[in-house]
Image 1: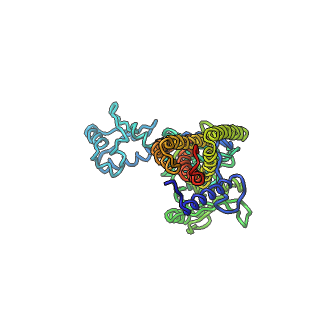
Image 2: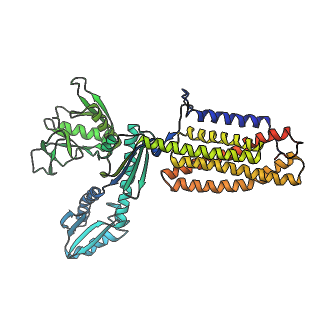
Image 3: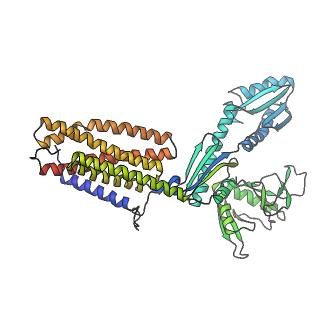
Length: 517
């Protein structure tokens, strides 16, 4: 029957009041934690920075193949097969063997049951391919191998980009994959992207290596420049420790010299390596190399076994903070190149907000006028429910501190239309019931009950579309689907609880009156 218990009336009223209060937090300042939450505005509304990054996988491929040379040499050495002229050039490993070993080499590379799998599991999935040309074997990544390598690099880069941006405290960044070698970064509210560009443009590959004057070092040497000037030094290619061994890095001010430094803490493996290197290398210079440039090269005065140390290099506090951030977040698997960047000014964002709000206001006023003229008192009830529905929707978005975009505003407008559609279906069904039923209470109850299937069908199919858009789409499409999806639930609540409650109150007081609708 068309009836609401006192408990249900109290619950519906409380829910409505709570969400109206939460939604109001977007227009007023509250100290309470829950009420201090607000809806965030997206890039298209408040302005900000847009960066499209492309991953340069060339160094990754070179490094993987370089590591593979040692694996292949050691493996075939155990097979008593001598490889001749093993070298890497143009992303291809080349070598030759005696004629009697050629077939065995091919079998080891191509067989899925090959004994080489424990040494290099990627052979099993044929990520590498081997081709014999003029008695020389050429080994390189297959198309499948390149795709997997790019996917792996992209996943790692995405996580590290997210860590770096989160550490800065940027509000509601949007970080997404594009293809298999690009990353999209949207930073709402960020007008000056220079610091972000600087942080994302650094691979942050940190190594500790000895400075050497012996150019015949068994590990090989390379000439590197210091970051601050054009001075050069020969540095051993032997890596004592890498950034992977860092547990933490923080900017500090040295109390003795008043110099800004970066202090770091090592994991157990790193501390052991660092302690051993500093104990055997007293009097030597230890080069701290970041992305191929020497930050500093202090002379080792004593053994450092504590697992902590510091990096100095004439830093400002800002540059020390950024370096510490880079070291904490880890090294990128490959360099990132910025191939597209845009800065959306706040004026454009405000224009978008104004346009969206005007469209929402015009649409809302027209709907209110139409529904009131069409259904009189019940039109007024519908309008009250519509207004509360908007507060419910904004309240839910506020609780989750969702990001509102221009398509999101379109989703809200569509929600208003769907809420009206549900009420129109109900009232038209009630009119049909009143033709055959003289009891107003029964007619209204039947109208709500018999129209429920059509309303649920329409809203469920729309909800399914919103869910698909949310998980398959990105950026603005997600914003639209989010507001639309939440709006469906608030619409059903406002129709079947708020509007129906108000209808019950009015019909109960006028149950003998004819021509109610």
